[in-house]
Amino acid sequence: MLTKFILKTTSKLSFIALFWFIFSASAHAALELRVAIKKNVNNLQIGSSTPAIIQDSAGRTIGQVEGMNSFLAKSNGGNVNLAQWNSNAIWLEHSGDGVIWIGDRWYRGRVLLTRQGSGITAVNYVDMEDYLYSVVGAEAVPSWPQEALKAQAVAARTYALYKRNTSRNSVFDLDTTTATQVYKGLSSEYTTTHQAVKATDGQIMTYNNQPILAVFHSSSGGHTENAEDIWTSPLPYLRGVVDYDQTAPVFQWNKSISPSAISRLAGGVGNIRALIPQKTTPQGRIVTMQVVGDRSTRTVAGSDLRSALDLRSTLFRVSAEGNGLQVSGRGFGHGLGLSQWGTYYLAQNGVEYRQILGHYYQNARLATMRTR
Image 1: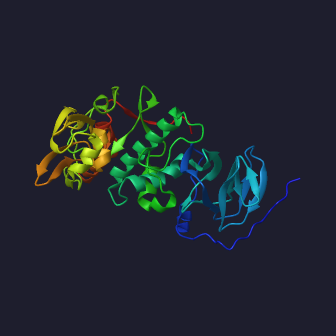
Image 2 (image 1 turned 60 degrees about the vertical axis):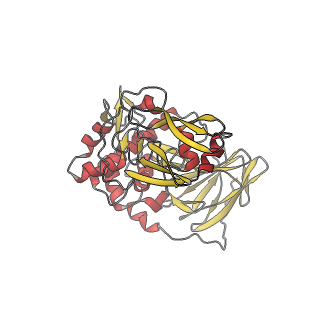
Image 3 (image 1 turned 180 degrees about the vertical axis):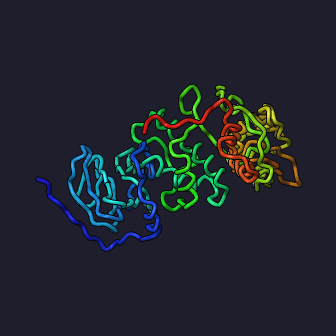
């Protein structure tokens, strides 16, 4: 017989962002995504805005908690511990129009706490359209024209579906970072993002009736790239096109760097004498760079330089300036697919989202998800 536990704690959850309940859940059931909110952490706060049920790894209801309380989830041997419950995985699902608290934010959907590595991973199981309310607000600027936000919604929905369909991870499909798509729960939802998601309900970009890898970036610096020039294999819908991002604040940028930073990366070259692009993409992005020192010359990948020097893109050149080095670059991101600042400019000038998507995703077509 199930024993029902009602827990009371002194740690009340914040009411921040609960006004988003006016939007409630989607009017219809849709696709559920698995989004890793926290990965392999020692402990984290979990709670619900409304009464919630606790289930074990087999899906059996083992308890209940009151709303507006938080509880510390932590690892316990090979199990997850949440208050008096222990299991190799624990589910928390809110009732009614509630939302869940994971770490430091409110999220729609439910949460699975599971052991991964030596810690706990919290996975948000969330309806695709609910997920997009947040992603569009986190990836784009909520005050942008609706046509730009609609284009972002379709791109983000397509990307999420592609990752869900191709994920080889048994625990989650996406995370919350730029490695997949930025997702901040209710804190990045806005009226405008709800409007854009609802206006494009279920719409995705396809090639041969399959969702495309709808990657996007902030600004290309004037021209996007072919997939094979950034990665290894060509994709018929990721072709380089003229961008319209000249008004972007990241279209051109400069950064002063210390020669020692490059010396540490190149290793053993001595004092830097020159940095010479060895291989570039058709649009000028650095694939490999020769680092010439007074001791030796090394070849360094452009992506490694970007990471080590914290540059906005690999579309850059380096010149000597006094005792330092000056980096002059353009754009922000990998330069593939949809350019967000290009999308903004086109939308501002009356171009509707279907045309925008068709421009940045060549040979792809707009369709509606079959799995609903």
